[in-house]
Image 1 (tube, rainbow, N blue to C red):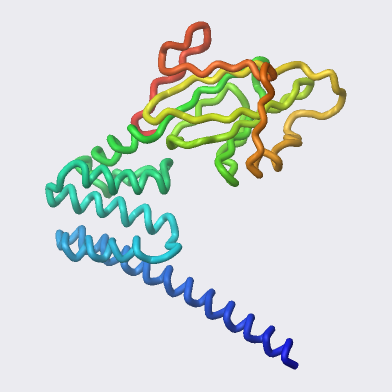
Image 2: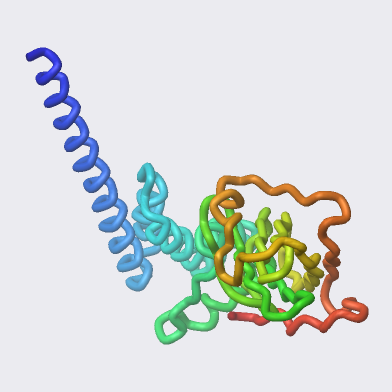
Length: 247
């Protein structure tokens, strides 16, 4: 009976915790709605207070936090705050969602352009080519698969953090490559895969994907031939496309 009672209490506490988290998200959402409403009504002090409440909610959804920081930046712009303060809140927004595009039917240019200016200094692009061409390519950040495409590939909106690449092709050795992209730059990465003597396997199987997502990256000396270059200084490699302003 005692064990059964303890089990019931665990269920009750779990339900209460779930309700508490749901209530917290409701608080974050309502505060965000209020903050945006006050902003468009030019009630800037009330707007910044409401938006600050969103950022104070523990484990608030990333989309709520992004918009809270974004609109905080808009408030600061309207209040003619120092550029450093505006950059700080816009940076917080970009780090939460570097791929987010603003709705330019709603956001006027004098607000969107300062945001994109900050964003373009924080994100980068990577132009990936390979030998042979059309190799399966998976990009991983932490536990998340960011893209699953084939080379050649232009990947943009990556923040200045560590990534891992997995390249696979039938008849060639799989290659794992650690990568740190430079903020605000377009880099070219060329990878030459080594032929495999093993038979079997095939495109798309990506046998090492579970391992790479767990954080294991090992590149044996001499096993991977690759060059990372910046901008147009790409030598004999194809020049990467220009860094897009808003893509």
